[in-house]
Length: 229
Image: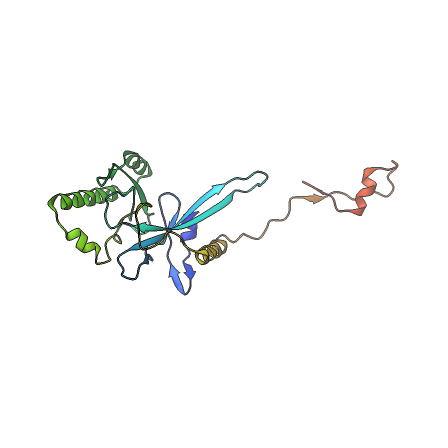
């Protein structure tokens, strides 16, 4: 479903938004982040897709939600990291991080899951390299990473740690009703239903006026259209 929605560009307010599928079946506006006025804080539109079944409904229901996912400047305290693979046709990888406090490492469950999916192992290697580089910089008291963060480009590379909810951030998490309406319009255009198939139901045969049985139910069928499944 995500790959199908990502095949067509999302046209919003005169801009073309390229949605990228992720490894969890969602969509990300990877190349068009929301930024604050200073350009030092960024967030991505992250669309979640889920199929659910409801009682007395034959077809599954597509549940769509969207939020502004804020990108952290560093890997410290990050529980989730979004990473771009070498080929743009491949989905964005969502990697869970383990550990407490500032020190983080790739979760073992993420390693097993990505290995089964056949993901590029260089993604995990690059994430681990960035974690080690930041830890070494903190141990040496190097302020280079902080200086890079103030330029406004940190966090917008191929590896983007997700900011925790408990931290203050210049960009909010809400997307607004205009975003949701435009997203609904885009999804309806892409998933436009095909012309309906001819109904499999056939009308019941009309009752014969010469039915020999008095008060037969079939004699009353002529006053309304009866349909049999």
